[in-house]
Image 1: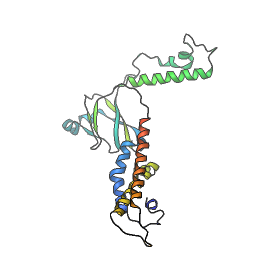
Image 2 (image 1 turned 120 degrees about the vertical axis):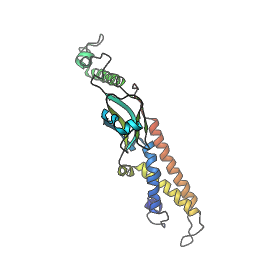
Image 3 (image 1 turned 90 degrees about the vertical axis):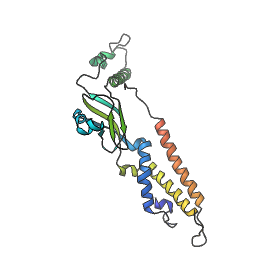
Image 4 (image 1 turned 135 degrees about the horizontal axis):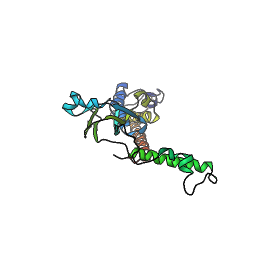
Length: 240
């Protein structure tokens, strides 16, 4: 970042490394974890029902989760019954049985490509109905304190579907993150230089306003691109 700001050290370094580090750790990392879809990854955690009989939970009605968990999508009960509760006969969803036995489909006239399409559609339907029949629980999660409150009675083990923060070193290597922090550093450098009226050797002056404007544009561009990514994501209907 200092190389970018100083144009390969052609200009004197003015922004301390500690100030860049402070912005990264206190603002940039948190913003990316909360807004950038690739800064988190989907994970699953198993919680034994015994955790809800501990002294901490019976006294405070919450359990503490790992600090890397950013958000929780669903909490499912682990039950012994099959998740397919609507009477679907899974073997009959195969190509040999479910597809070719339909009234207007025959293995004599149906091509293998059409069979593949039908099989894909039926598998998607089975996955959707499987999702609709999972036993979910109501909950509240405070990511600042990593506290999970279950708002109903817990009688089974639980599976948590959550999004956890990627390691910081992976986030630091992301081009969007580098561009975002570099834009902020340019803006801070321009603000700092604009507070004083001085010239470089040879009578050359910094264009502080240009640095500030360029930094703002880079940060805004990153924020808009990340916002557009989240708007183009797909949603799957499940029972809650």
